[in-house]
Length: 128
Image 1 (spheres, helix red, strand yellow):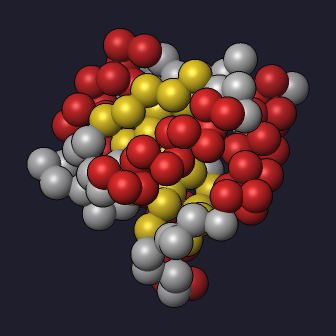
Image 2: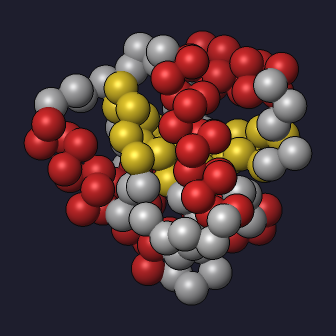
């Protein structure tokens, strides 16, 4: 089953999302800040990253830029998770290198659809 790295500093969000993803059969690795997220992305090479954009240490915008700049992690799809639902925030996430965008509070079926679509695209060899 695909491995998802969940980078989220809010404990309730992290626990809820990781449990629901594990119930769907995904292996979930968690990180609580952008620095830890970068380290785990390099060490674990997940199939997909769920990136909270408002993180301590290193925010999600900068963490995504660094992931997409590095050869080892460039191809890992990143879905931005943010409470900021403005169109400009979605554009900012795309500019940082995110492959998709979802708003909080998380609507799990919608997020799951985005995860599955991106994983399918990667599996078929397509690039965003």
